[in-house]
Image 1 (cartoon, rainbow, N blue to C red):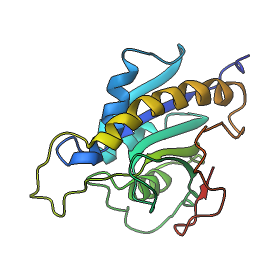
Image 2 (image 1 turned 90 degrees about the vertical axis):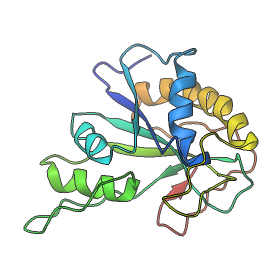
Image 3 (image 1 turned 60 degrees about the vertical axis):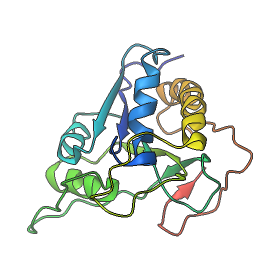
Image 4 (image 1 turned 120 degrees about the vertical axis):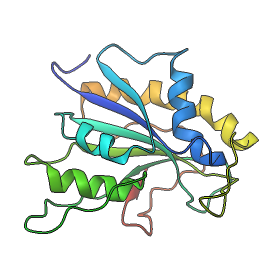
Length: 190
């Protein structure tokens, strides 16, 4: 059962020209063939951090960011992370959010908004190939990350109904190698 008025954003983030960083956009593209329930906003933000920061201020209960993130797992491993959200800052310069560093995007959204940010979850995939610099263009994802795209779509189809029914619920992620320990970055892995 869906709670009346629950608003949910699923946002793909990453650079399609930087190998496995394209995981988020690839998952959003795969969702075109297996759409999520009506009323869920699904959007590929690519590297448009400013656009995502403003979208997070649009009254969502929960936002699920789909991204590649090096966490020390086997390539292709999916993790569900709930980062600690930054507090609103006043009287300081806004954080820079060019590109797509999710922490900077969340800081910018917190700086710009008058209301608290929505609950943010990150569906992350451990990359295998990460170009070493901005000049290293490497389109296409590695085999383990390509295999993880369909698992991420399945995970979103399991998570979204749970989050629509209760935005504060802990959605399932059926991966045996997931940790429940707090990550070094100060976020929880589920």
